[in-house]
Length: 582
Ligand code: C2E
Ligand code: MG
Ligand code: MG
Image 1 (cartoon, rainbow, N blue to C red):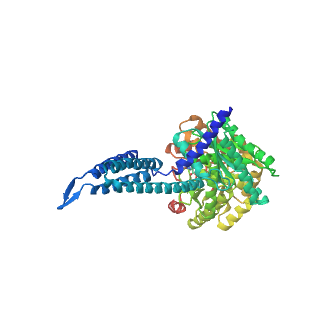
Image 2: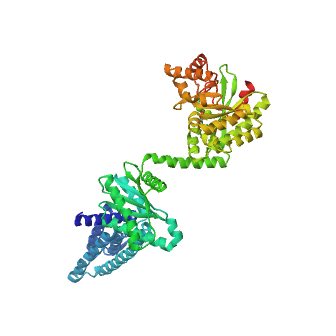
Image 3: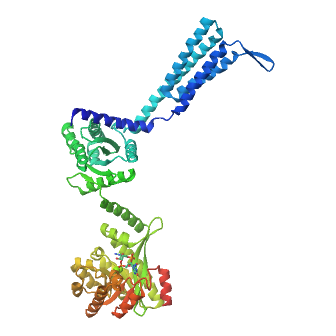
């Protein structure tokens, strides 16, 4: 880059900080333009009137008394003084200059009146003007002190005390103004890696020194324009910094700038003689491509920064992308699950299952979770997260324990044979204490083993066949029934049927949905049912919503159905009514 260009950029960078500071705090005590001219003209008109009156020997009669005209000159000249004072107060430097000039311009005509025409009536006018001049100077002087003081406060408010670079406030102010102007830029969130370790092992003093040292080097790049882009660096708090980059043409250029800031960390070690490595994580997002407002941009660059920090790779720079939200969302849901478990807000609903003559077979227990605000969260939202973060077995257990107690009660009270189906995720199934938990659950609830059915999804069975098969054998020994959930959605369903020691196949809703519109789906369902029967399984269809589906299922020999047509998932109280009346 040419020298001149560099200097231009440096100026721009500086003016950029100044600009922000100015816009942030510049007091709006300047009056409107028309007010300024009104005061100036008012002053001139009144002054001319004063000089006429002062030279006049005419009189007026007021209330029977004869009053000479020049007696009014004092009143009018006080008025003109008020005008100049208002100018100084409301129009700062410009008002002050006009006020002084106007007051000084007034003096020669008065002197001329005195010396040429011997009109001594104007003499007090001179003192009036001099006093007004003094007042205006005092006001201006005081104003200047206040302004200097305010400026100091301004600088303090937008400067980080430790490092003397702009702070969070200046940063948000700049980003906000760029968004308003629609100017493209990149926001970079920077966090020093393992800074806590530096503090803990080297002491706060060293930690602070590193921050100050680093800041001043970064500021040098930002102010010096050596990156080739227009940058603004600030410290947000602790070991967190933010960089705003402008005037780049491609992502590559922005990235080059970030790498330059990253390189400072290596230099720092070499030139300052610290005997530890310092690295930082950089996450960035572009306006307007990645985010359209300040809050999302800042949070997006932050998400990217945390993402690259967590991956512990040798690369420390990452651009935000939408799929990173999954992590954030996962964290949020994980928090909700933990809270719900702590506060006993995980509960169950029961969805009835019927045979083809509408006789009640039993129920599937479905997990629900109450959020802190009282709203219900459905398993589609929390089960995948619970599986990922290792909480699903706790949910399974909660649902099993509570629903088993309830259904055991129903069986006793109404002397009915009912089956309770519970969903078990593979993580749970392969836990060493899974069987023990089932045994304890059965014992404590009093639910007979043959009234319990464990639903395992087919894909899970295939992935951990051996372990699952062992557990299933043990469960069968307890009299517990096994159902293969979502059957048909796995990749090699039919071929595995032979090896899975189950009792019931649950045909997935997706096949039932398309069964009546696609002959192929209907044939597929028919094939599952007949093959299942040949191999000794019973078959239930999930998600039956229409009479027509029911008709077809009867026709092709399905054993049971579960679906909104005959029963949605319901709360225990409603289920009790259903059992009593059926
Ligand atoms: P699933 O085991 O296949 O359960 C059937 C799902 O289909 C339930 O959704 C049920 O409400 C819904 N459903 C049943 N009939 C109909 C119908 O006619 N129309 C429609 N549109 N939907 C119907 P839900 O309760 O949201 O559960 C979703 C999935 O979450 C379950 O699918 C199961 O895989 C999982 N899940 C639920 N509770 C638990 C639990 O306690 N533990 C574990 N590990 N997973 C659970
Ligand atoms: Mg199920
Ligand atoms: Mg299912």
